[in-house]
Image (cartoon, rainbow, N blue to C red; front, side, top):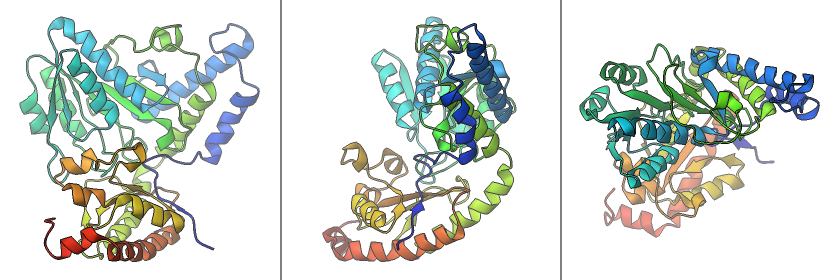
Length: 395
């Protein structure tokens, strides 16, 4: 029988057994509304506050700085739109971000541009890394916010967040980071790194989908994204998802328990995959080799279409993702890969493998053994590969 290897952890993760066990009481018996004053409601409210303390401890924050949301995208929207609308009254209508942010950031910026805000999109270079100096050079008198993702969701490159935070703090500019991919994978301390706002999502760290966090530093006040009830201290309306909040808290405790040991183990597996797949002719690693998330592998295979590659690997029991946006109904290649200088043809043939602490050495062996033959087979059927070999398509 074929082996099953889940290697798309950057897309989502499996809910862990310990997270599920932490959630079950709140799915079954702890169904009280946290806003109710009777015992069952107070119990649910207490569970939320305990979870808030755990999340704060993992991020180096204070419990009163943690707000539970529905997902990382909601957190991103709240941070950007809230800041823009808050500071516009002071004449600050300029934002700074990068060209390869998650669409939750890029589409929020596009929406704000339609309202008259100006956005600077910093180029990320062929390695997929910006510098703190780029941020310093882009800050203006009317800059309201700098939003730089902690680690890229496609190519895994890690940005110099502490240095950027220091520059923003010294210039009096608020600093937000989308840390959805970073939480649990790198050590984070929002106070030490001068982070004013941080977004994260539960389903990237073995918690369920549908729950996220926005950290807002004490002293910063932004308008609500959602209005209604008085939940989350009056800042985020909607009856709380108690079970998922409890699950997220348990997940972040586990994910942040011993990050250095996890980095050492997973990085070795990641490097084995990179070295193995770079044996394929003309394969190229996307993003910096060293300054990347421990579980991220993103490699382009010219002459191969991403959709065909994913379907072929799926038949072998390997779950991964591609550099083409086929799953969203778009024929365009990834904006991330284009931002680091890849041509459309090369970007379409990219493969993202994202492993985790749950990945085994046997899983790594299976990936290394099976991806190259699939590439060879697909290239043998590809007119594009034939044109590339003849030099008719420049890579």
